[in-house]
Length: 220
Ligand code: SAH
Ligand code: DHB
Ligand code: MG
Image (cartoon, rainbow, N blue to C red; front, side, top):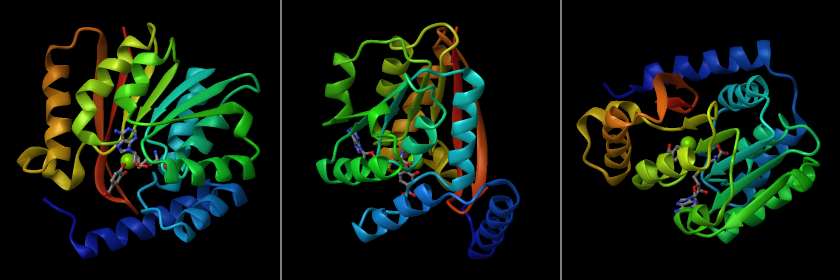
């Protein structure tokens, strides 16, 4: 069930092939990853292909206001902010002031600082202070709180709002549970079983970041 080393190797090589075929050279994203590494941030950003996927989803949705929960160094934030019109905004929630400082530098370097508001603190304290509606919500923080984050995302949405949640499969540990992070995603799926305010699906993914998956939902 979990990804063996050999599987991961071919998934990573295919990801590099797809990046070469599909993704333009991107100095701002490359510099963001380099700064993240220099600053000691964990390499848990979405992959380049996944980031491009989020960017395209935001473009397809015509998003003007995007909410992100979990900024890290702003790699996904850059991908989302670039999908916006010049008067659009990403509000991104980050617990760690250190991560937020790195993200701020990366967003400035990418020329996107004016389109992004970083809200530092526990997202569960920030979210009740926000006013919607947001057109797209990307949830990628502490998975223990995924059920609550989904609830806030729906509350802050409007009919048609796109919600994406990262890391919902975790190498198949979704099925077996046993750590607070996957237990959080299991609580989110249990809530979705009764949730009438969204229609949802999930996609399992493999690639440079291993075996995982995205939840995709649309507010009714
Ligand atoms: N979306 C980023 C990766 C986010 S990693 C990208 O793809 O580039 C998860 C981030 O969530 C980390 O920076 C972590 O500090 C942050 N986080 C963890 N708990 C949080 C909380 N309670 N509120 C807000 N952010 C939190
Ligand atoms: C990990 C990956 C993620 O995408 C994330 O948001 C948090 C943690 C990880 O691989 O540990
Ligand atoms: Mg993630």
